[in-house]
Length: 227
Image (cartoon, rainbow, N blue to C red; front, side, top):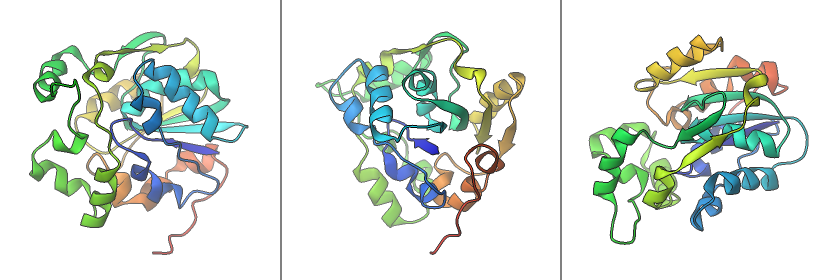
């Protein structure tokens, strides 16, 4: 069963169009897992466990969610992992949610309560608007974005060893994930480019759902879109 994991910076609607095309796909909602403060990694893993059926799962992580794949793999039975325009965790140890050089930018955005704006409010309009296929989709995705605390981005995510003993692959849309694609290839993973912006699964869900990874590991061809 494909389990499509959204970045905690956004919400489950970023995966809904793809989930509608994949038989038996599940999209856990991680917003409550990060709403009450730390420990974020453990709460995210528990949310995935509690919202997915038992059985062999194929984890499909987008963006920041990629860092949580190892700890999620301890909570559920995982048989394969696909990283979609996502950060890659190391083989073991701990991974920063963001690189230290990015933290000053986030601190400048943080309000007196320690909260950041919604993720799409971090960037200029000319960068945000093209990521969405239409205003309705943008409104839906924007409305469910949480305002995360700076503390979320200052944490390090534990990486249990052995998580990458299952088949892994990397699907990327564009920069800056070109450098991550190089690392995935170095690890010997299959790497595929699907040109687009960071939320390309909203723009072209058919191409994402049609990735050969799903037919190889998730048990079935994608269904035809009815739209």
